[in-house]
Length: 444
Image (cartoon, rainbow, N blue to C red; front, side, top):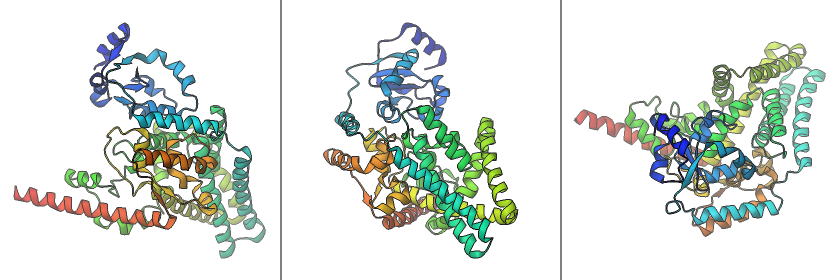
């Protein structure tokens, strides 16, 4: 439905709409973007550009029912809904709009979690998290300052700096999901500080990518985390598409072998650095650029006079590589071995469970993964403070059992091993499709 026709629609405020009409407005080929929330239809064509979570995340639900992600992402959905009257264009026909039982069950479960106090953070917990990050940073510097540069002090400082950066990454993740403070503004402020000043990255860039991942995890064309075909093909659908498209750029049948060398070590120091500064430059996020510059200036002015610029650079790059390895193996163990497919508009729980799995709970696993070993619960309730995720886990598992949804829990070692197994399987699928396609072309 075009822009002119949409203005006419707004003027008469149509009372009832059908799924056929809504699905036509899915943002494809210049069409408008309509979403459905609790049976009410909203035109987010223009609003998506102003959306605090980014235009992409809301656009991924154009032409679809966005009720569950709307309620999952917003701590106060009723409050947010009051500001949506200006873009309200009608409501779904009662004959066509029926929410599934699992949607209602999830809503009841969330109400239970609220009554249990699972959306209330422990400020002492987060004080300890930030405290031990700062302690690691300070200790890494004073080791160089008091004992000088040697192989032993280099290794120790790098270890402490790596822990600080990884744990800082888990902390900024909490602030980014607005799960620490009641005030969204305070969460955003601390997210900006931890991401930009403490880690040298852009909080807006992180929001742009990460919110899309949560909205449509492992969905081809919508989750940026699986947009990796330049180096890797994932799942069972992508290998075939890439093979038949003629855009293959790597010998993907060997990707399980080169992943440990091209993936984890280079994600942060190479790929993310390029993406970060491209985002800042193209979006003209000069405040982010200033704060990222502050991070690098702080590091150079702290370590440069102490150990020299070259050694300071060695400390920084080694830390980034180790941080990248740590993060990548943890993050991919929850998602990469799971289903990676086209968008089929699954309900929220089914969507998240198809794309995520958990890693067994232990004190070490909780700390090492930033409690993202409870990835299932985090994806279903992204605003829940991470130290409560283990408490809601039994309820989520029961919900999955009721509706016949597989709830996967692995050991950490199995999670890491499954990454390689999945890459090997996808590589084989690509190989068969690629050479099968070539044979067909030759025969024709």
